[in-house]
Image 1 (tube, rainbow, N blue to C red):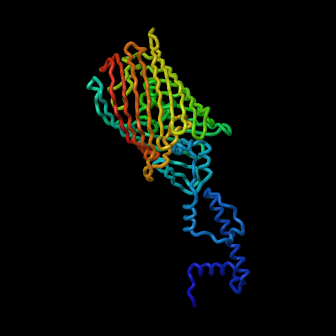
Image 2 (cartoon, one colour):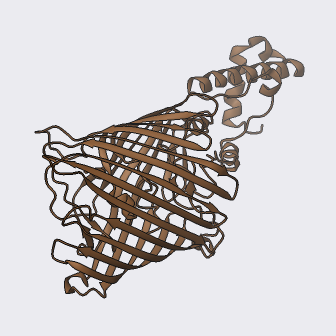
Image 3 (cartoon, rainbow, N blue to C red):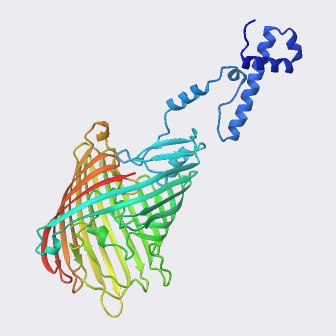
Length: 498
């Protein structure tokens, strides 16, 4: 008598116990009908279990139930061969957005396409998604390492070579469902823990063509073109004087709330913030109201026109009345090459505003910015005006489009066409900028300008090498380096963003 497999034997015993009549002398038709009925019942139970687990299986019919089911190995192979969920980026020339930067339609697309627990490797680090598509999480990080050398100044104290970490950040971002999102980052670049971005947000649509989000927490300014661009995406090692000088007294960050509207070719934002995170609650915070808007009146596959405007108004805290400024003009890591206002005390409030005009055609981009800040002082002293402007340009030798983000009106990380890690040349960009800064409205205020030539080599979409050569001139009337002076600064950076 041939051996009976254990599984087949158990099935036969169960069939005999359940149907004694059939256990005597079942016909072939009766056995086939019974097996078909049991297969349909098993498929129905499986469908109920799938629904309880949040899945959406196809409708089960008697015909499909009778079909042979796939083995676990076959199911794994089918999942591996299935095309991954692709989230369309804001523009094809920039890397796809993270969970906190998706618009609501993209977030809904993620939630509506559950495919089990997924891990997608994007720009440097993975994006994790839960089986039901509700929860999304992504680690974040940024490492920017700089070296700077200055020569040619008539002051020995300015001819220095220094190194520094422009950014050393670690954080996370994520979302719950299509509407709720969050982001948190800390910076360790000054050998201290400094909380930078930290917010919770909600996004939704107002109509078929307009959506919005609201953020609350420690927020990055939406102010000026380069001022709204992250330090990991600026085309130069340092932002222009418009972004570094025409700025609220509290700096680039403040705790508060920001609302943003997005249309097909425009965006607008309004924020109300206090001081940045400082642990000081003994006095009132300064209050800053800020707004920015941009519009793309021309927008094609390979060209675009950018028009922008922004402004802020701040009422200063009694603990923030010192308005003395000393603004870098030859790179961030030479603290001696600056344009100074001289000592300025007794500030009551400030108002700043600016304009942006630029765009790109093919691989060539141009951007002009100008800004003005008015500081109102106590007593009978007249207001103090700061003025700055810049003109920048760049060209990708390797054919990439400029990494312009039309949703935010700023630069992002480029989508490199042929990364070096795949055997290609990467992306090579040539850049140039002229910037001017004027504090001479004050008796001891200085002025200065800088002309920069640069080259950026993007090995892939999240790794880059940058080199800037800067010729600068300053004329200060206060401080250690007074009078006219000029020199050259060469700066380089290795950067990784993930």
